[in-house]
Length: 107
Image (cartoon, rainbow, N blue to C red; front, side, top):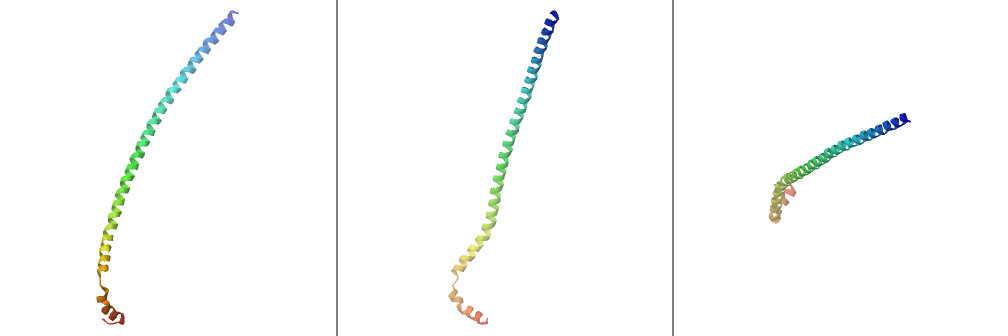
């Protein structure tokens, strides 16, 4: 009977040590997951910052490209506009005689 009590006492001690080991391991796992969560939050914050910067760069570059294309198109169109205004002021009646002679093959 004494042997049985000593064995039960040893099992209780082993059971208490096992619980302590499990609790320690569980705490260690919690610490590791807390660190991983913190690193993940930092990674998400950095990704958001990078995507915000990328959006601003794309916005600025598209505005610059639009300005360049608009300017490149506006200059020739201004020249065409002045030519069309000159064409609108042209009096074709004065040129009718010359046009008839050209159409007949004379110069």
